[in-house]
Image (cartoon, rainbow, N blue to C red; front, side):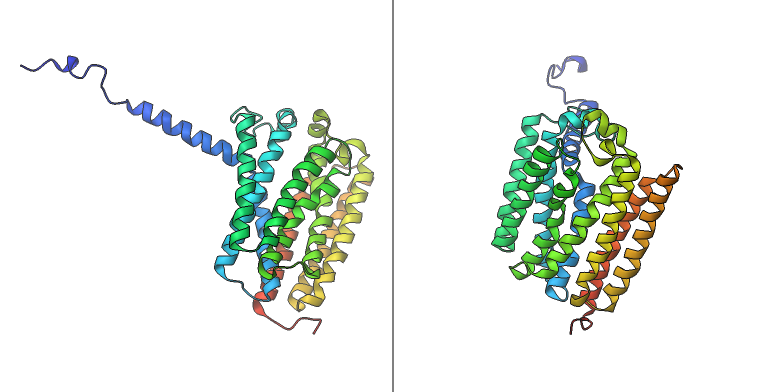
Length: 320
C-alpha cells in the first residue's frame, strides 16, 4: 500500500528551483565582486602598452606563447596591486560617488579576504613570470606592485598634490616588464616608453580629477584640482602635454617613419587639445575636461599601436 503523495519523502524533497537560482546568483555576485577589486578596465589599458613594447623589443612579432604568458602574469600583477589599493582606500571609495560602487565600499567583500586575495595574486604573478619568462620580468612586477601600494597609495595619495605624478610611475612598468620578458634586460627604448606614459599620466588623471574635484575634496584627497586654482591645473596639464609629445620623439631613432608620423601628428593633436582646455579655463567658460581624459586614452592607444605596427612591418629604423 503506497502512502499519499503528500507523505512521501517528507523532509527529502529536492531543493526548489528558486533555491538553485539563489545559490547561483550568490556565486555570480561573489565572483563579480572579486573581479571588481581588480579594476579590469585599467588592466586592459596596461596590457595595451605591454604588447607593443614586446614587439619593439623583438623587432618583430614575439612568440604567441611568450606574449600570452607575459600578459597573463602582468594582468595578475596589476590585479594584485588594484585589489590591495582597494583595501587601503576603502574609506575613500565609500565617500566618493565615482568609486562608491566598488566591492569593499559596498561591503561585498570582507577586507581581510580582499587583502589575502591581493597578496595571493601578487605571489602567483611573480612565480608565473619567473618560470614562463625570466627572473627580471618577475622582479619588476613585484616592484611595480610594491610601488603602487606602498609609495603611491600609502605614502603619496593622501599627503601631496604630486601624488599622481610620482605614483603614476607604477603604471609605466608594464612596458619595461614586456621588454624584459623578451630580452632579459632593460634598454633605452623601454625607458623612453616608460617616460611617455610617465608624462602622459598627469594630463590624463588631472583632467579626470577636474571633473570629480568635489569627490576628491570630500574624501580629503589633495589631488591638484582640489588644492590649486583651475588655471594652474590646466597650465600644468599643458606643460606635461608638451613634454610628453616631445619625449615621444626620442623613440624615433629606434623606429621607422610609421611611428615618427604618428608621434608627430598625434602629439601635435594632443597638445592642441590641451591648449583648448587651458584657453577655456582662462576665459572662464565652461570646459569639458573629460573630453581630454578620453582623448588621452585614444592618443596612448594610437601611439603604442604605431609602435607595434612599426616593429611588425620591419622597415629600417631611422637610426640605421
